[in-house]
Image (tube, rainbow, N blue to C red; front, side, top):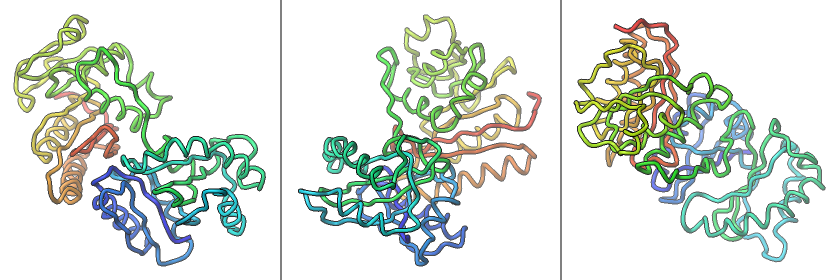
Length: 363
């Protein structure tokens, strides 16, 4: 197997390609990305047979910013016959000794308007395909979340990539996209960005401890309150920092304090803040440095913030800003865990999560 499939946001294929090229080289896997503009996916072609499996197994999926999903490609079918799409797939996979027995099946498309027209077919195709795969011993008879996931990605009618991902090194979500419902009482759609960030960055079993009722948070650039809403609905108290107006529905909860000051100048008067969140429209380098300062001073224990990307050189900007932030924290002897992702609800921006692992007294 020489190909690795990566899903991404349409229009960000170049960034996804640059990232997988860098990550693969670090693992001494050499090859090149095939990029089609606005396709919503990238195929990385490895020179060495078996290297796609190595990447699927050893390349930490959580370290990828622009990829929503990745899987090793076992076969590509360019023109499956409409009268029988199952048999060619079964025949091909049965001849591949290295293909693992899988515990789940996802028949997907890239996230583009054209490809998503195939989703209705994908849903109908899933049950008979699963039965056929189980009949040939290519899947376990019962779903098993600990076993590899078998992916069939249709990029056009009759044209699909078939492969697998490892369940401990992939996105748990169909198409790599969390299905979130917009809350009717939320003041803006931006609320879904922070909710998705919680799903992606924080293990669900840790929510009760790390997103606990009674905690204090700070929201820089809060108005009208999309991100604040996520903290309030988890019964937190929030310092909302913005010169604009907050939604009345949030003010009426009694859980927020509105500070009409510049987000870059605000300092919490009580040093009991757990969370700092920030979605300000500012230069990304400036926001990243501000978040580093908050953690260094012990003003917060965890941060989630967005970095707005320039029109050109987006990947280079991300690398530079993250490297500078990491160096700043390391030089100041701050232990931390950093994750970054181009979330489904992000547009020309990425979302960063930092958990401070040092016990820093606020100062």
